[in-house]
Picture 1 (cartoon, one colour):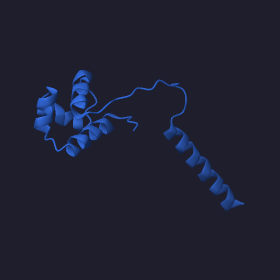
Picture 2 (tube, one colour):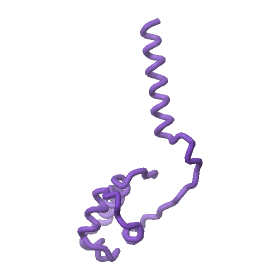
Picture 3 (cartoon, helix red, strand yellow):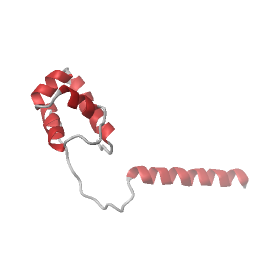
Picture 4 (cartoon, one colour):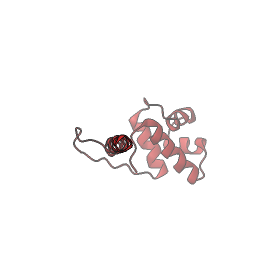
Length: 97
């Protein structure tokens, strides 16, 4: 799974917590964070502390993999958007032909 936003990261953690039938209080205690902090993380707060995020995902059994790529290469989302634009352009041309 690729995650590109704080909201997606938080939602993924929340989903795993729910799959494990853990309350926020139980997970917060296991990870050594406050329940209020965990709530903010699950809602996608962009300024949460990385060390605490790592503690929470470890408590959830989530592994994070980092991949290094070319930062100038278009992402799959960009490529999809560009393809959709091309297809729309072709469709308009066909309509006017």
